[in-house]
Structures are given as C-alpha cells and as structure tokens.
Length: 120
Image 1 (cartoon, rainbow, N blue to C red):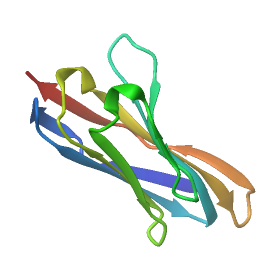
Image 2 (image 1 turned 90 degrees about the vertical axis):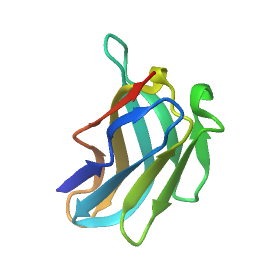
Image 3 (image 1 turned 45 degrees about the vertical axis):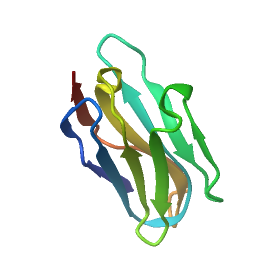
C-alpha cells in the first residue's frame, strides 16, 4: 500500500509565502504524475498544478507565475512553493500521486489535506 503525508500548511498574510510538501511511502516501484489540488469552502476540488515523471508541469491560470511545483524522485516527494499568496488561495490543499507498486499494480493515492489560510 501507499501512504502520502502532507506538511507545510498554515496561516499567512496576503503577499506571503508557504511551501507544501507531500512524501509518498510504501512498496513503490515507480512514481508517475504528482499533483496538488485544492478545495475551498463551498467549491469543487480543482487541480492547482501537476508535474509529470519527465518534469513537465502545468498550472491552473489563477496561480501561474506565483506557484511552482517540483519533485524529488529520490524521496518520492512533491513540493508546492506558493508565493504572493492571495485570500482567494485559501483552501484545503491535497496532494495526489500516481504510480506503480511492486506487488499491487498501479496506485492513485491522496494526501490527508493541509489547510492554507491567507488573511487580507
């Protein structure tokens, strides 16, 4: 089985920065796409950013130029550096990792969620 552990959320003033981390562990043989989603109160979960195994990246328009996704394959960890934060970035952020395990085939795992609150 695969477990994801997120860290790095918190309260920050508008214009500030936070860095989220998500580490995957378990019987992982290969990690493919890694991504960050968020869900604000009363809204649907949306994809914020993802990074492929080949380091290709994509971002939702609202965070382009402010957020940067990266990964450390040696640690099976994905990061989200968030700069110039705005109150509308307030949400619970979830990481998502897809890949393969040694014994159980493919996996599609979710983190537990970390709350990011941006005050105005």
